[in-house]
Length: 189
Image (cartoon, rainbow, N blue to C red; front, side, top):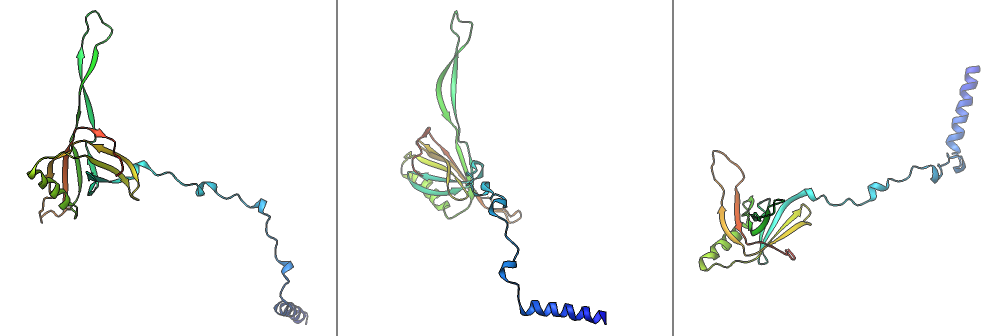
């Protein structure tokens, strides 16, 4: 009988809660704002672009876009130095600059529709040699410019197409080599 009394009491309590929900005042209190952890402010700060994330290069000749390349070698110059030993001066040898030389630039990429633009530029040499200016821009994946170089009096000196061999399938690539007479302001690319 005691067991049935407890069972009926718990049943009454359950019925009471089912019929009469708890009022809103019995909800557990929220912690005050001061007790909450501060927001992570570092995650809201914009991250500067990574200059090492360069993935491709844009080549323009006198403002005409020749497309995007995924490799660029040879952006360099060297000052040739002549040594002069001055009589009576044993402290040092004069290092006199004589000329500046610029290496040939090699641009590589998989074959694209832009290959026809390169072929047209090279073919135009048959009607007379003009040495235009060029711009090379190093671009991130989002298209933003990392750096850019202007080149004076460029000339295509070699184009190498793909080796097409069904025995060893690989990506068909092209290489363009250009000579130039120096660097200049790249301007807008």
